[in-house]
Length: 373
Image (cartoon, rainbow, N blue to C red; front, side):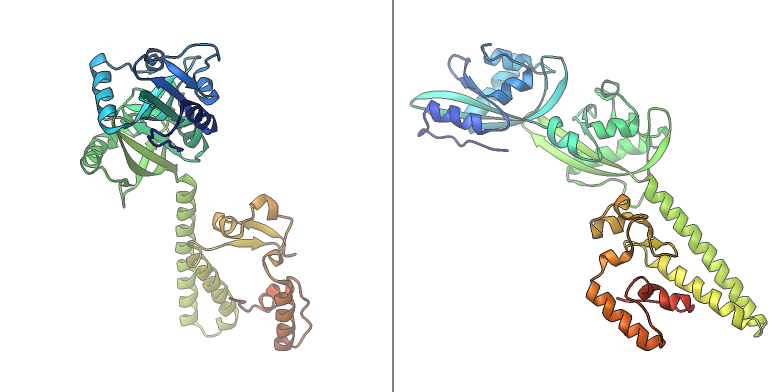
């Protein structure tokens, strides 16, 4: 967030100009009169204020969703004058009554013996919260939900007002709630960002009662206005399904290899027919074992890509929609290298191997494993 340091060298005109360069909402308030001397467009847009409407501290404080007492305000003002700066997380309401969180920074600035409060408000929910593609929930010291991002609402099937003010355990299956209370007490005591439930299977509860596996990261946020806990929630349903499929395939492959091994031990006569199948089973098993964190691509008989896993999309920079049915793996390789490999295979196999997908298929068509690093 852009900041303005305290200085006696600024004049108010320059301070106003600097306010206009900020993307955050900014307002300058005279300490003695409690009235604003300037506010930028971003500040007025946050609260839906017309340009001609006067602004003072009373109006700014009225936008708070949860009002604080005069004594609390006096204590914060005293702290501001002592430190010269105050940071806080504040929940405001705009002109439509919609609430949002901001990171509020108030700086005490002196210009030509006149003192000013410079408020800079950076909307949290309207920037980071709305852009990130994982569920985020903010909880206060009373373990009540004070903010959630749109992605989390979609993930759990709730409306925002369903969650605000509720305990975080609403999002957890009833069997795990008591354990979660202990977890959050431990986190509050330590206050360091970390994964939650390391080594454990964690589940969340949707509004419709459906449970789903999740990974949860916890973060602590401290400000003069209090302490908050941020929970970053990721739905890992698809990953768990893939892991289970891989586990089942491995078990099937192990059974297949075991059966083929028994056949080999019982009869040498079956060696010729079973050797090729064992080699295929071994190659498939090896591919599955090596697939953890690796790129996996499948192609049809013509060499066109039929599927690509997420790791492949991430590392190669393509989406599945750009590749499936449209491209061959040749798109990932250097043309000169493919042509050179075709010549090498032609010599090794004593037949013409063209510089296309046959570079990858030629040995496979002979029942041999092809591997090139």
